[in-house]
Image (cartoon, rainbow, N blue to C red; front, side, top):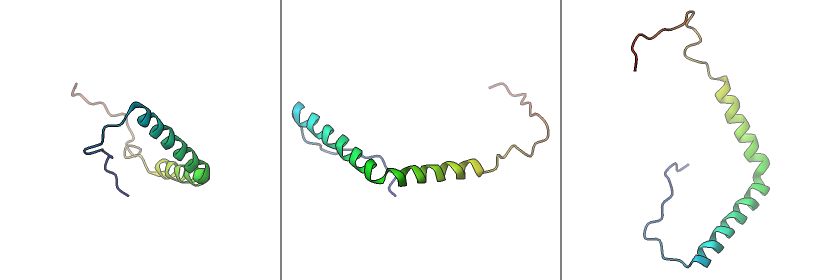
Length: 72
């Protein structure tokens, strides 16, 4: 999956009404998408959360409190 941010290069100048209509369309599109695939989206988010919770903490094995003398 492409993790690069989306940017508009040389985006055309649009009227205020066109900008508003386009945003309304995009909101309607994402709402329809989430209605169709919402169960799958929630499932994969839950699975990612569970995997993250199962990863061991690197500092769990330290049997004592760590006091860092460097103050920064």
